[in-house]
Image (cartoon, rainbow, N blue to C red; front, side, top):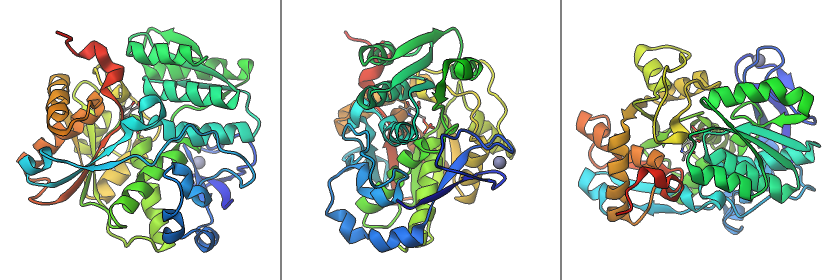
Length: 388
Ligand SMILES: Cc1ncc(COP(=O)(O)O)c(C=O)c1O
Ligand SMILES: [Zn+2]
C-alpha cells in the first residue's frame, strides 16, 4: 500500500490517513489521498496490470486500501469503452462512449463507494451516512450491505423512485427530505455526531474520489495510453471530473502517459448550472444556483464543495462548460438508444446534446477524438419516459 498521507486540496495541510477523516481541519476544504508513485511504480506496470482481471481493483497499488485488507467489491469498474457507431459519424468526430451503466447498481457511483466503503470499514466506521441525488445512495446502500455496515441515506423526496426503492431493498435507512441534496447534506451534518455516523458526502471524505480516478486510468488503458482530445462529462458534485484529472497527473508521474491533456467539458442542466455560470463569468468559486431543477437528478447539485477544483480543471485544460435543457436530454435518450443500442441516463444523454452544440460552435473540431461518459442507466429514470 503506497498511500502516504492526506493533503488538503486548498491549503496543502497534511492529515493522517490512519484514522477516519472528513474535511481539512484548517480550512474546511476537501482532502486528497497522496500515493507514493515512485514506490508504487516499482510494483505495478502497464504490462503487469494488463494481465489482471477487469475491475477497478486492478489498479490496487494506486488505490488507498492496505494490502492485507479485502476490498468491498461487487464487480465494479472494467466497463466497456464503446466506439460510437452512428452518432460519431454524423457528428464527424471519432466518438467513444464509456458505458458506466454496467457497473453494480447501474452507475459510476459504484466506483467511489467500493473504495470509500472499503476504507471506512478498514478504519473502523460502523454507520455510514450520505446525502444523495439518487445513484450514489443506491451504491452506498449496496456496498454498506456487502460490508455489513449500516447505511443512512438522505434523499430529496422527488428523487427517482428506482433509487429510493433500491436503497430500501438493500437494507439502507432512507430519509426523504423536502428539499435538495444540499438540504439533505445539512441534515446529516446536524445529526452525525450524535448518531455516530461517518459522513460519506461527495468530496467530504477522501476516498470516493480515489474510486472515481479509475475512470481516468481505464480510458487511458483502453485508448492505448493516449488520452482523447476532448472529454464530455455530466457534472454534479464533480467527483468524476476531479478524480480523472488526478489520475492523469498520477499517470504522467508514473511515466505512463505524456503531458497532453484532454479538453475537459462540463455538461450541466439548464435548470441547475452553477459551474457553467461561474465558468462563463470567470469566477473561482460557484454561487449556489437558485431554484435548481432538472430530471437529470445527478446534476441537481446547486452548490458543490469542489467547485473551485472543477473550475480550475476546466480552465487549465482549455475546456469548457455547456448547458442542456431537460427536453433536449430526454429526446437524446431515444436518439442515442436507437443509434447506439444503449439506454442511457439523462445525464449521459446530456453529453450527446453537448457534443452537437460544441460541434456547431466549433469548440470541437472535425475528426477529433471525443470520449463521452454515460454515467448511469436510463432504467432508473422511468418517470421521465412514456410507456405507450
Ligand atoms: C448518473 C449520474 N451522472 C452524473 C452525476 C454527477 O456526478 P459527479 O459530478 O459527482 O461526478 C451523478 C451524480 O449523482 C449521477 O448520478
Ligand atoms: Zn485546508
